[in-house]
Image (cartoon, rainbow, N blue to C red; front, side, top):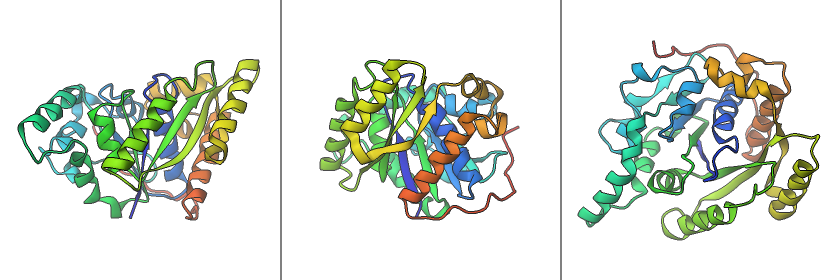
Length: 275
């Protein structure tokens, strides 16, 4: 059964989507079959992986509202072993619709909608990554309910830990109510500028607070990582020799090791992108 990992942080601009795209790509590069689910109405993972939103027929909105089977929303990308369920702006209305349904229907529980769909295809993938919106609303609750673990990107800047306590409380609440098995996959330090004292201090603070949960890999602040999504490519395709590409390969190796699986030799073969 595939491992389901939600990438969550309600603070925007911490590298969550960048990590969703590039970790998915790196895992695929190492021979793992990966599904990336874009659960953010901003659709940045969708466009960052090279899909044209105008060509999308089914999206995470249709999946979460059960207006289509999850298999019909999966799009194979042109990148190794990587498929995606794209997002559309329409998804922004799902929060209100789910809330309204919870009031109208006695047996309706917010959190069951995505899990039911993912459970039907978990055995097809080694890893299923969910790029969550920068909120702790109904969409994120659905992701947490469907997940085995959460990966928390933390930016190496002042106030980086602001809001993380609230996120941890949400994880605990989810464990106590709808998903007792939910765990913290790890904390990822992102956007490190090693020339600044503040960045290095944040690294030290985060490691003290989260201890062994912090990944050894630290994602550097690089222009190439910012540029890659505008070309619709993961960093491994855009600039495979840059430090950002190496960092995400190392992160993927850590994720594989933490989950007790072996990396495979990168194999050729790709799907077909949406035209």
